[in-house]
Length: 145
Image 1: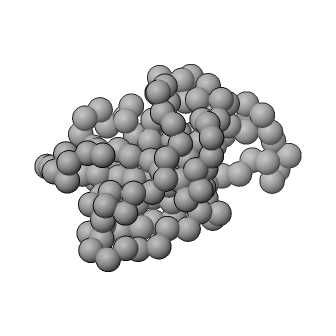
Image 2: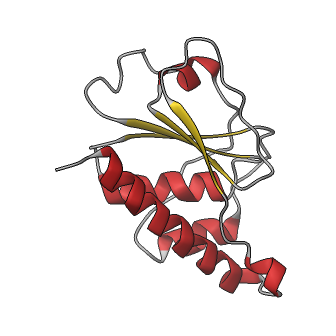
């Protein structure tokens, strides 16, 4: 675990989904790619799975981001207290506030192409593009000027 002041001076964000194998890892990889070291980025799951979604990793790599070396992990309440923003991806994951939390919790109702009959790598690319656009807007909001 990182020391409490690991991200001192930088805005911080925690991306959360259920399994922490797809959308939240995708968002974290994209934000790291966009922000470099300007934002401290984390991801976690409400019920972490066993592995990273291979299609998610593939489509993130297509845009120059990387999920290499990442593993699904659960939410750490100390981290939840410390980050500036907690972003929940999709309606299935629920993050309850914890005492002493300094940041906000926001839910992104992300695009779900499977509801339109779109699956496989095409589905993942559409999700990636939706998440990437949201990450860019979040980065702009977190680092004004």
